Length: 383
Image 1 (tube, rainbow, N blue to C red):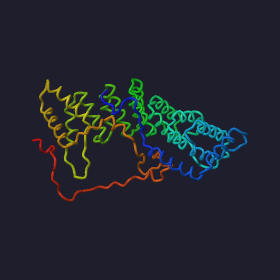
Image 2: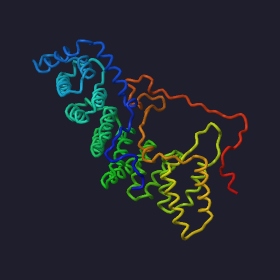
Image 3: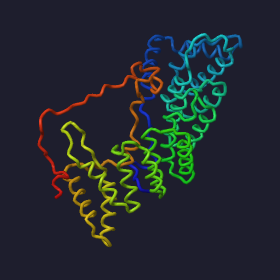
Image 4: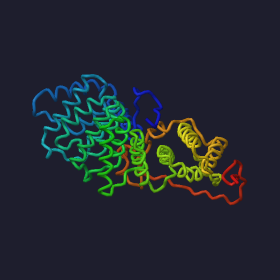
C-alpha cells in the first residue's frame, strides 16, 4: 500500500460533516419541536402508538409524522413507532397529501442523529419502493452512514441502486460518486478497485467530470493497487494540478514509475516565491520520504543533474517549513464541510435546513502595492 493510514483499520469517520448533511439543522429543529411539546412528548407518542395499532381509518397527518421524526429517542419502542408511522402514512392515499414536504432526507437525518444505519437501511428498503426516499440527499445521507461504519460494499450497492433508478433525472450525481470512490478507496480490495475503474471508464465515456476529491480517491486507489500509470491518467483530467492531494499523488505515481525528471517541475511550482498573501504550499513528510528513497536508488546507477536539483529542492522544502507531518490519507479523507457551489441550492445537501447554505462566499483578490523582499530561500538561489 502506497498511502499509509492515519488511523487503525478499525477507525471510521464520516466523509461529510454534520453541517454539510443538514444534521445540525435537524438537531436544531428537533429541539424546537421538543420545546413546543414540552411536557406532552410522552402523551403524543402514546397517542400515535394507539393510532398506528388501531383502526385503519385512523389518519396519520403530515404534521404527525414530522413530529415523530423530530421527537424520536434512541429506544427500540420509538424506532418501532417511527417505522409503523411511516408505513401507515404510506398506506394512506396520496390524494390526501396536499403539502410538498419531503420526508426522505429528514428521516435519514434522524437515523444519522441516532447513529443507526440498520434502521435507515430497513426504512429505505421498506418504504423506498414507492419513491418515499427517491431523493439524492436521502441516498447521500444513507451512504455517509454506511461509509462511517465501514460498510463500504453496501455503499457500492447503494450507488448501483441510484444508477438504476436515475433519481432526479441523473445517473451520476456528483456527491454520490465522490462517496462511492471514497468507499472503494477505503475498502481497497481487488473487487473495489475493479468496480472503481469500471465506474471511471463509464463516467469518462459519457463525458462526466467527477469532483476533484473523487478523482483523488480513484487515483489513490490505483496507486495502492500497484497501478501508478492509471493514477497518472486519472490525475491528468484535473485542470489545475497544484491542489494538495493531486500534486502529491502525482509525485508518488511518478516516483513509482521512475519518472523523477517529471517531479522537478512539480517541486519548482511549489518552491516558487509568491505574493505575501498566498498560502504556502506543502508536502506530506511521507511523500517526501518516497521521493528521497527514489532519488537514493537512482543515484546508485545515475548521477544526473536532475537528481542534484531534486536533492536541493528537498532541502529547500525542509528549510522553508513546507513539509508537514500530516499523512496524505488524512488529508484525502478529511471531512467535506460544505457542499454549496455556484449559488445553487440544489448542490447543497443541507439546504432544506440551512437557508443560506447555497450562498457562495465572496472571494477577495488582494494585490500588494509595494515590492516585498524574499524572506526564504527559493529557486532563484539555485545557481
